[in-house]
Length: 532
Image (cartoon, rainbow, N blue to C red; front, side, top):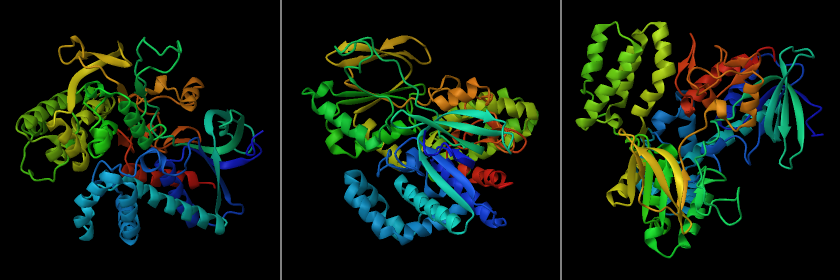
């Protein structure tokens, strides 16, 4: 029996990334505003990985050189901005020295690009290394927990285990309470009880891609004979970069040292950034090839210098007043295509387009607004993909040197090519003709995105759906929740699993950035603090 099995908690939080940290900080603040409870509120935080509070982006699985993909001004919530900037200013000498010592060439490049603006306190346009926000979160949550304990308001128990199931329990003083089933590192199981549960596990697991028929001589089920990295952050980004370097170093012929990257999202951009600024790794690679549906990387964020640009067809639709969600997305795509041809890409016109689309969507009747959110929002988000100058410029250097090739197509399968290598079969777009890419790849890195919820390999997600405790919303990106962010009585959702929320209070296509999570945590904390 686990040491926690005999304990009943008031609140159990599954996952300990930014969604948990932000929600717990705000919950403690809410409890501090209320009358001191007769008995401290008992809170459990359950985390399967090696560190609490920072999650994947801001902790050790990322890199000291990983950057926030948008500027600090866009990234940080207004309620946290002043305090975070003060934290950066106060500890500047220490964290700058840490980047110099541990960041290698990428760190030196970042300091060279940003030391001037930082010295002049121009934080708004700086792309901050993500570990700094992680360190800030650690300080704040630890201080909050310590204060809550000293004040007799709440206690927080950290449990290192994987929550694998959630069983509704109608016994006891709270009807809609739960038993959380846990699995520990040694394979043993246990459970805790909790009146309220917050699911804050971040994004679903990475969606695996098909492996080739040819394996090592170890037989069926063995690891592929080529280098295959399914998740660039597992066990960690730096570890995987070292693995790539080691694998390529063992190949004498440079023309055989090719890497295939599946997907052109933020994680692939981060990989390119690291490679471009690590000459020891960059010089090993002959060719990097990215296959993705768009065949494009996110556009480079550019300061708003074209405020007079007009999306003519969208403005005409606004004058029309009555239109459908299907008309809206078609018009958006038409105007974005025209803007691209004029070199007025979304990195320059994002805010104008986003504001105009928001205004037009609000003109739709309720059912059409919901249809746009459920059906078209994913298409719209792909149109407006942007990335910071630091990341996008690094990718641009690789493209201009001829080392990076972009392929627009739908990946089909990996085909064994002998000599511990594979080729990629894909359907080119828009013709949909099957092609076999000519290069042989010594390594494959999967940056293709996350699993669909209904097919998730996560046991907690699969069991919540199998038990019909939760339902997937119409976008297939998140759970159906009410205005209180409840997926079931006393079961709350926070973070990316809220993607596609659509009700009278909240209409959000995705919930993956710190600013939005901070906003939602204020709403959630008020509910969690009730009756505690």
